Length: 157
Image (tube, rainbow, N blue to C red; front, side, top):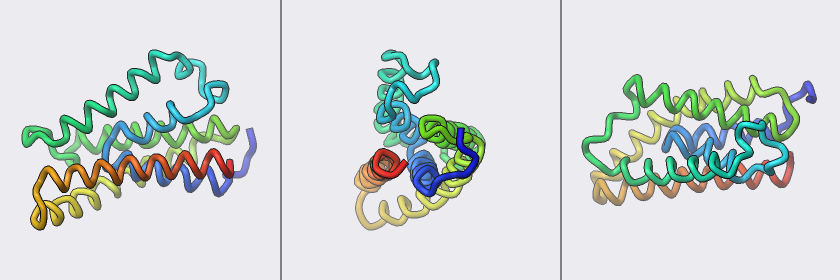
């Protein structure tokens, strides 16, 4: 493992954290699915883990639109975003052969901030459009952030 944090891993961790702040499962799913299997920790290399991660992310995209879905800025929502965001940062650092703690902290912190920013932006969009449209736009933003993170990592890490 290298001691210094590469800019690509730092940026990837922040982007995955932002994605996790909008949709808790998105960052870690992207990290698991888009990383080369050989670089992943052994527990994450199994096909079932990838399928489960994608299923969880898809399920969240659907459940998020329900008015009964708990607030993301409540303790359970923030805890999930912190843990899953941090996990995504740790995964991409591990794949890149770097120490996992700094990217994990960066991704987890960004996930918390993005949860609040995303909620504010979605609330404003829902007033101009519809709640469903605002949620779908937020889905696309979360997917795009995760995609951008993995593109940066595949190109520069």
